[in-house]
Length: 387
Ligand code: NAD
Ligand code: MG
Image (cartoon, rainbow, N blue to C red; front, side, top):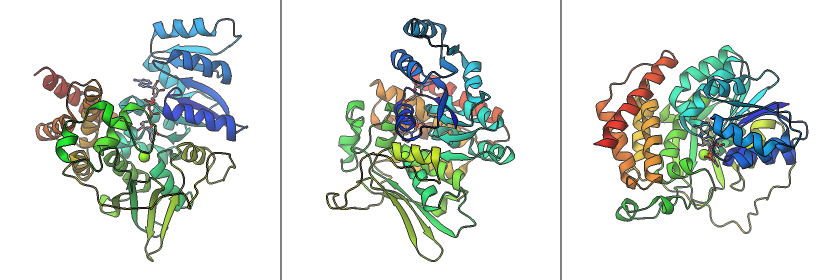
């Protein structure tokens, strides 16, 4: 199997390469992309010897070239937006792992599908902004979109590897959520929480953007929309359930009342492995769950009052059209501001709510509608940011 790893230097990217190293001896890495961490990208390029490696600009390309000098590496170094698309469609590749963060992941996803590549998708933002286009294109091109997100991998495993919920008797999906680092905090403490507080996730070590999304519960809102598209389910059929231990990664309830749950340690390498090898099972030495030392498994309802981003995402899921794209773009910008201590925790949801109030939702017919919605969002945040 020939794979490309977009976002190779990030949390999912590096774990994907760990899976390739330890579990998939027949996988060949043909493309790697990175961004700011050029030394890590150089080390990975030296190790995996891909055909192509990508960085955003010329300065980083020069830095990379210097680091690879004297290593005998024949990898071609690419830069710029068009070349990122070239990475997504590279001929020998059968599976594109999209581990980019944010809206930068959409164009490569669409290009890879058009080129007939299967997608192992970590970049949930692609599906949130353009799920209808992606799923339609995937059907037309006979391409599988396989989730890496642990919850969606769990759902897929409960469905025995079938990427549809309708013809297998699904009654509802139970999407579990850890509740994030502020689950038990009173609202006034959350209001004063810093990015450093929010970055201390109880169960998972992830990139900064998704870690903040987990603290606001926007991540669960994005995952709700992701699940609707992936499994063809209406919002009413997806229940969000807080399960602080992150042992049950999600469940499927069938029309006869039976419930399947997928469990395991909170280790992203397991859903990554399933995305690349499933429905086959591949043995590995990753840590196992021990029920005797596992604490209680508990459940509670999500609190939309302390976590208004979840209510906003449900609204966007319900309205559809270009609203999820606007929400995603405003959220991404606001998360960046929060990470830089420029706005407070509830500034993120307040900005999204204001955007919803000022925006007129449109239907999504093609990618231009998404780009227009994102451009509107950028104009909106720039106005708000300088106000
Ligand atoms: P990360 O920040 O650790 O890594 C992001 C990767 O994308 C890096 O390789 C970075 O160099 C690259 N990148 C960043 N901005 C870029 C840009 N503008 N253009 C090109 N490349 C760029 O993020 P992550 O935590 O690995 O998350 C990646 C995706 O996976 C996100 O969509 C996230 O929601 C999803 N996801 C992550 C986890 C997790 O455990 N980390 C779990 C589930 C889903
Ligand atoms: Mg998840």
